Length: 330
Image (tube, rainbow, N blue to C red; front, side):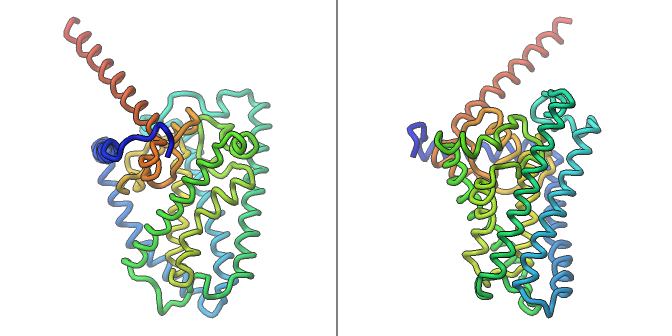
C-alpha cells in the first residue's frame, strides 16, 4: 500500500459520502437512469434471445469471436458518432453537463496539426481493433469448447444469472484494470507505453481505445474478458455480450468529457464517474479504476481526487456567498 494510503475508517466514510453526494447531484436524471437500466434489463435479454436463436446450429468457436468483433465495431462506432454530434452541436442542454470548460482537442490546435494527430489516432484505433480481432479468432480456434461460453438456446440465462455474472465480470475487469493501469504508471513503463494514451489531457470518447498495442492487450482486452475466462462455459454467450456492450459504452462514457446525470453507470454502488477518470487525465495521478472505486479507496490512490473535490466545493460555496452578498447590496 502506498504511503499516502488512508485509514479504513476514513476510506469507508469517504466512499459512502461520495455515493450519497453522487445520487443527490443526479436529481431528475436519477429517474431517467433507472428507466434506462430497467429498459436494458427487459429489452436487452429479449434481443439477445432472438440473436441466440439465429445462431443455433453453428459452432461456438466460429460465432463467439465473430459476433464479439461485430458488436465491438458497432457499439464503439455508434457511441462515438453520437458523442461527436454532441461535441460539434454544442447544444446548451448537453453543455451544462460538460466537466471542463476548455477547448476540445480539435479546437485548441490548428487544422493541419489536428489532422496529423487525428490520422495517428485512427491508425492506432485500427491497429488495436485488428489486434483484438486476431486475439478473439485465435482464442476461438485454440480454446477447448469447455472454455468458451455456451450458445445453446435451452440454457439461455435467467435474469438473475445474467445480472450476477455481469456484475462478476465487471468486478474482475475492474480489479485487473486497476492493477495493470497502476503498473503502467510506473516510470519505467509510463514513458514507453502508457504515455500514448495520456497525450490527451482533456479526453473525448473516441480516444478511449487509443493506446499502445501492449497496453491495449494487457490493460484493456485481458481485463475485459478475465471474468468470462474464469466462468468458462458456465457463462452464456448472451450474458457475455450483454456485459461486453456495457464495457464498451462505459469506456466511451468515462472518456467523453460530460458528466451526464442520466448515465446508468452512476447507479452502481461505489462506482467511478466521467469526472473521476477525467481527473486522472488532467492531473495524471491516481483514479486507476474503471467501474468501481474499491481499490483506489483501499489503496489511497484517489486521495488527491477527493481533496480536489473538497476544494472545488469550497470554491463553489464562496462563489455562491459572493453572489448572495452582491444581490443583497444592489
